[in-house]
Length: 140
Image (cartoon, rainbow, N blue to C red; front, side, top):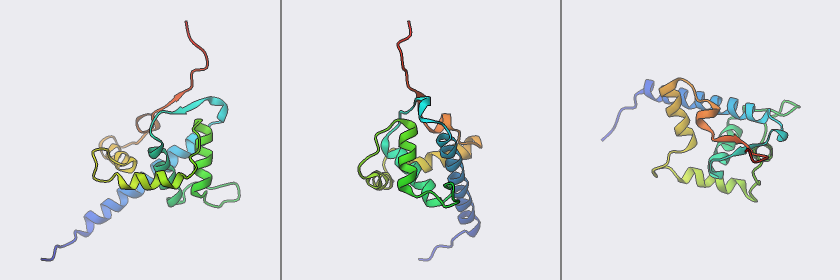
């Protein structure tokens, strides 16, 4: 039995994915603009963080000073430094873990972002990432 592919539906799906990648790249680029002194701290899973870095690296939307797209390893290193997360020995392992989650109860980061874009028209840092400033002293 042959099924017909709805061309418009496929193109809409591709466009949503492209918009999601750009949204994630903007969010990560904004995050990387922060300095390590700001004491930002990642509160999500390391798998989500590496998935974010992997999607942005694969899309090639962030560049270094010479105009070359940042590779996955460099993006992972920079992101972990800004968020005060220990860089995993093998970050690509976490990326592989993220792709294997498909079909489980938890959605991938990209699927969550696509859903937020469809519902709210935006995918902001506050709704997507659980990033908080580190507490440096106890408040009375």
